[in-house]
Every structure is written in C-alpha cells, then in structure tokens.
Image (cartoon, rainbow, N blue to C red):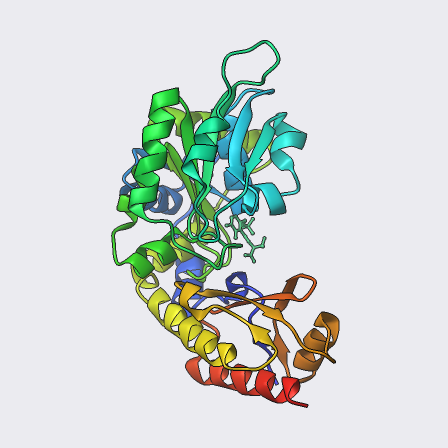
Length: 345
Ligand code: TLP
C-alpha cells in the first residue's frame, strides 16, 4: 500500500499536465539567457510578486543564500527569527559561504518578530559592532504552525527598515499558501520586501525550483551569485514548464490542503495524549505534541509507519504533519482514526 506521507509538501508528485509540459517545453541555454520557457516563468513570477525581475534557482535554500549574498557583504549582520528556516535548516550557509553574521530574535508563536526587540537589535554605529544590513522574514512561517504573516505586520517592519536604512528579504517558500489563506493577492504580502524567494516544489507540486524576485539590479547581482554557487543551469526550461503549470493552475487548490489541515487538527485535538491548539492552524502545516504515559516519540513514529502513515518528529515528542495535493480528505480521516487507535491501545 502506498503510504500516506505527511512529512512535507515537498513530497508532492508532478501532475500529468506538468509532465506533459516538461516533455514538450521549448528550451535554450539559460546561462546564455536564451531559454524562452524559463524567461516566461521569470516574467510571470515577477508580475505575481510585483517586482521588476525574477531569477529561477534550483531550491529554496539556494534562493535564500543567493538573496542574502546579494544583499550583504562579508561581516554584515542580519536579523532573523530563531524559528526561521534560514537560521535553523539551511546548514548555516550564509555564515559558511557568505561570512554573514546572524542575530536571532525569538519568534512570536505566530511567526512574527516582536517589533520593539527587532528595533533594539539594530546596531548603532560603533567600532565593536558588525553593521546591521538586512531583516529576514518568513511567510508562511513553517516552524510556527505554518502561520501566515499579515500585510500589516509586513508594513510595520517596512517602516522600521526604512527608518534605519535596512533591506528586507522575505523567505516566501509558501507565500502562495499565505495569500490563499488570507484571501489576498501575493503582491500585497511581497511589496514591503526588497527581495522575495518563493518555492514551486512545495504545495504547488512542481518537481524542482524556486524564484527570487526583486529589482532588475538586484537580480543581475543574484544571477552572478547563482553562477558562483553552481546554480547556473542550461536547458532549465524543462523545469520551468512545470512551474508555469503550478502558477497558472495549482494556486487556488491550496485551499483544499488548508481545509484538510483544519479538519485533521480538529480531530487530533480531541484525542487524549495529543496537545494541539487547533485555532492556530491557518494553512497546511500542523504541529502537535505527544503527551502519553506509555508511548514515546520514536514508538509513535514506528507504530504509524507500520500502518503506512509517515509524519516528522521535529523535536523529541513534537511532530509535524503537512497536508498537500497527494493526501486526500479520506486519507486525513484515516490518519486521525489511526492515531486515535494507537494512543488508546
Ligand atoms: N523546508 C523543508 C525542510 O527543509 C524543513 C520542509 O519540509 O518544510 N524556506 C522554508 C520556509 C522552507 O520550509 C524550506 C523547505 C526552504 C526555505 C528550503 O527549500 P528547499 O527544500 O527547496 O531548499
């Protein structure tokens, strides 16, 4: 039996329409900037985020790295949340490869950053200090229950950034989930950022790829850094073709994933041994804690695997389930029932 795999929305398989578009894509050499399909995708991405220009990169991690490299010099400091993907899950690339210093600020549970603390963390000019250059935000905020950040929060950070001459980079790996959850245009969430990275290979189901969107000048710099880190691609239009299908046809269906997440969260919250605040579930990501006298985290994962269900343990006793296109409404019910039966053994 094919497992119900809730470990991530990165697991989504390309749709039949994507496979067809990929096979038939008109392509060229993108290092020579001659791939028509890739150019079409970059133009569409720039339009959707309200930016002048865009650059296709193989992954979200490379997108964030290249963006930070394009904003910062070695020795610069950036401000970012302690639960942010860039800080937690990108192998410290910005420090290792860019010499960029991270100043972390505890995220609020909804993924925002406390504004007074953010402001206090901006360095004064002093011989002892690295210069603060950039604020990084994440929307939706993966490790804060997939929370969408509001345009109002983005506006407040913009005010601060402008006051102190800082730039804003937005890790918008799941920015389309945020826009769909808030029922607003993506542009409303990206206009305050100087650069934004979003992913095609998560809930949008494309097999590969992310985009960096920003000003023409920034994208020129980013193109050079992408080449430096080995991300210059050749007939990448085959990949871009799937991305076009994603942006044109698969955005609105993210609502189904959000609805499934809400339903699953409601059911899980009723199960004894599970700690979950279902009111916090706004998109496709659910985090919950296990609090059971006999079953520890590893045992729980193994019992679920034995029933062909996969979820991630992100910390001891803390689990993440991500809803996506390859998990149906019926399967979410199976998941809830299975967890209930495991925990009432
Ligand atoms: N996140 C992955 C894991 O790395 C945790 C996942 O399964 O959620 N920004 C955010 C907010 C992300 O969630 C991710 C991937 C990335 C960047 C990096 O994207 P990729 O995996 O394409 O490098």
